[in-house]
Image (cartoon, rainbow, N blue to C red; front, side):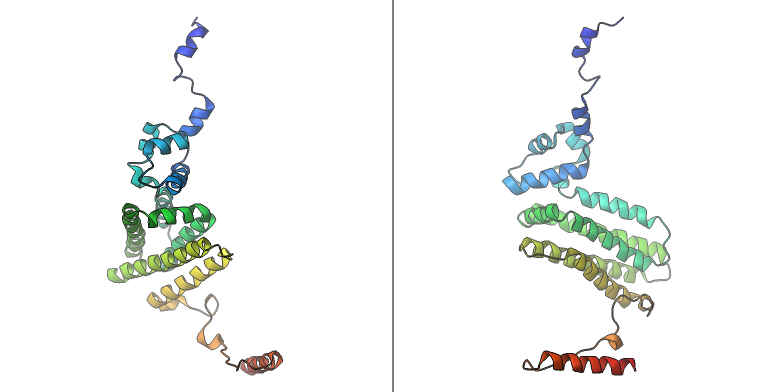
Length: 254
């Protein structure tokens, strides 16, 4: 019978739960910890050893998850790209809309993680090597979008698919930066409203490339015939403004 006293001499055979939990920490968890370190002490001043120690993982585990320190900060992008790739393996009735939905998925994920995304944005803006990596990351979204459209819309000129993918990506990034940096200015925001704003902008992009996308039943963007524009002098009384607008609306309905 084995001597129980020898168990302590073989610590690697039975690992404590804390150690197993540390090694199981996700790439995104480790990346979030790294972002906090970069924010606190600077990107260049932070080593992979410090990141691994703060995350409670070994250096070997860290390098199984990431090739280098440059890779760690964009781990959630890698995860999202994999999710989008899986989403595109499913057949969609409207490929144009599927690309817009994929971009909205990315936006929503970052809206949910706004605090850490804001911290990363500050670090990236201060670090040239990370700005370059971010540019490469953006191009990966464009490529996965355009590749999907070219597979799904064989009758469409490939250059149109590339242009649409670039337009969707640029629109998403513009709205994302507006959300991040408006929040950074400490103003209170209705981030749900920003999500709706992105949806409207993506709809406009989709309509430019696929005019059949608009229909009275599904179009979330008001058509020109549904808009009422009124101009009044600053001295106008509120009740007069309300009465004129009401009369105009009634005449439109009639």
